[in-house]
Image 1 (cartoon, rainbow, N blue to C red):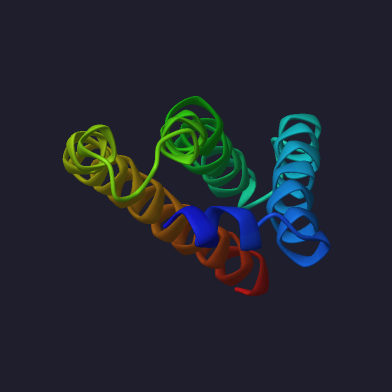
Image 2 (tube, rainbow, N blue to C red):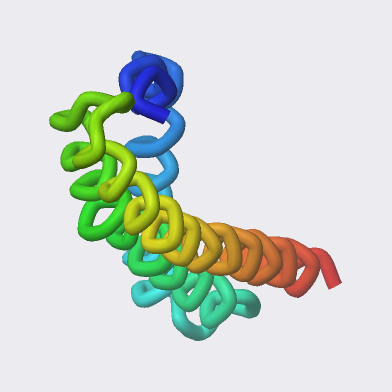
Length: 117
């Protein structure tokens, strides 16, 4: 996991992660200014769900867990103890991120479908 956390910090990942967050901010603002248009509510809720459930959860919970894991030696007793707590906490927050991202994607799809009907 320590090597994954190092490898994931690259231009492609950061562009996708930060870019999606930026697009969601834009969509949320656009939805508020165009509230009368069909699909605006889906765009707003989908954007907020992504920003809070995926972006914020990553920054507030998963990254600090990754940072704490990076500081320990994997083969030490401290590393083993931290890994047990890390695994359950990180998995919980990862499930929350996954559900939030899937729900946001579903809402964005509904917004597209709502506009084409």
